[in-house]
Length: 290
Image 1 (spheres, helix red, strand yellow):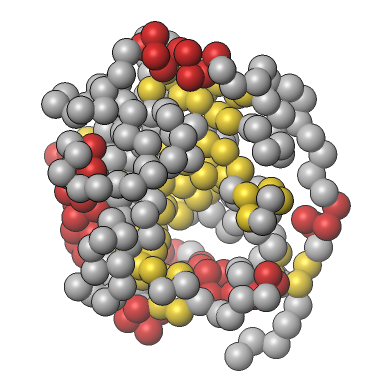
Image 2: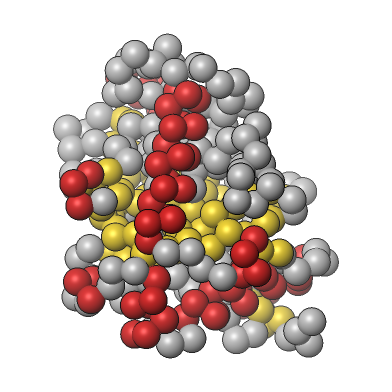
């Protein structure tokens, strides 16, 4: 994890649950702002913060509006959110997370999709064989991207592979995924198209007719969202409710001390045993595709 570690507060699968991040020296940091974009800029290797391990359902995400941006479980209408299992899928079908120091600006209309950003760091689907842990920071090779239009917002999904995967050297672009993991990209489109249908919502739409764009295109999208993040963290863009508290970004007006960061963590409830996951989370949903 490149020296990063995590500290749990409250009980997993509770409204209060938070997962805070520390650097190699044990100092509290923000995974959104303080973990660098690149693990190796020369090789276009990016850092990825794993929010949801493959095959799990709890919709965990970086809390963009909380100080230090810990991972928490998403809440809708006062209830903890679990992604539904739309047959034949079980939970998330990749390790799912975000690239730090990126931001899909809701005030910027994407020239490719004609829609504005979703106000979050850019999402990543990591397709390696290892099931990662929540809060793990891994280094990934970017292979391509899918442009999801989620309730009218642009929501890029970056396809990547952990550089430590035994087969990583064989994957260099999106067509390698199509060749060596047949059916995976089609399943990915199907997953994103239908995952909200059990909640009574319509199927999601895609730009480019659901076609994946290649590595170069994806890297340019990431670089563009990094520029939007730089404006956010320098207070050149109004981020609204987003918490930009950080400890390492030079010149940022939102920098805070380690004492302030520690006080934020200390204010959270102590770690407790995980609450049971409701049995209905394992239910499978079947419906006729449109």
